[in-house]
Image (cartoon, rainbow, N blue to C red; front, side, top):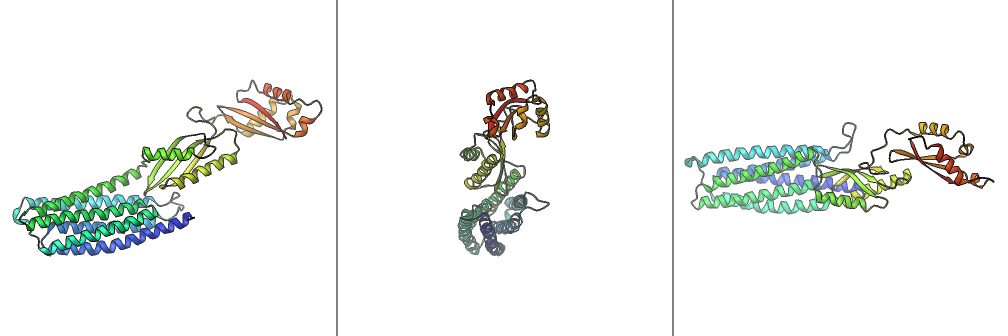
Length: 384
């Protein structure tokens, strides 16, 4: 079974490897398309080359942000560095929108100036076709790594490659149409490519903004999370489930209702199992905080005003001062339930075996002594 450390190392390798290979390919393609567009007189191909250049920036951002985001928590970043990836994605989205506006503006100006329209050469057709084939291969190759390491970042980058292939198809059609006599088609294709670039930038930027404002999981995914938590033994119910996204991952915190009389260690064990199962069953979840509740906070407000052990023990000592048997107790357990304290008193086994000892009478006297104190509710005694 792979350890989290192994999975993290494989993920880091996948991000680095695909980003470097993608960056090299995008650099070659962008230079090829821009040169072919300039010397082959195709404005649409130049725009597509700039699109590939934006993919190069995307790969570099994935590489740099991925490395930075993979670093563990430190003094200044106790929750880790994953949000660096989110910020980098937002920057990339804004950059793509700015590039798209520039391309569209120039292309629309040429549409209103027929003399400025370009007439593409056959060279541009070959450049566009090569771009389609290479980018489609890069899409499938990167998507394979994304599925292997379950990375939304790599999946998004793979689709970025696919959109470049699609934009090259638009360019190919525009160039072919212009060469066939439709003079406006190359400029129109450039506008279409600009719109596609802007849409990609908007999607990336919007997703990043949603992460920065702590948008949670969708309702269907939340339903899966709840079912996973309820499948853990000892969990009676859940409430106050909250999730938030960051860099394709998810952090969750939840209040889990358990039997109010379980021990601290058992409650802790239940919380560990909830955390482990969520991380195992829900791929995106990497950080879980579980709060154990003895009762539903929505129905019974937390008893924050009740005294803690030292004060509660002092009150009991005063209330039970007239009951000599109370001094034989070995320990007392307090249960803070429904706004009061239930008392669990443990006596040695010898105390109930002593001649004249009456366990029922002792319990009744202990309970009667606390009747007028609003802090305490009930008494239970155990021997052994």
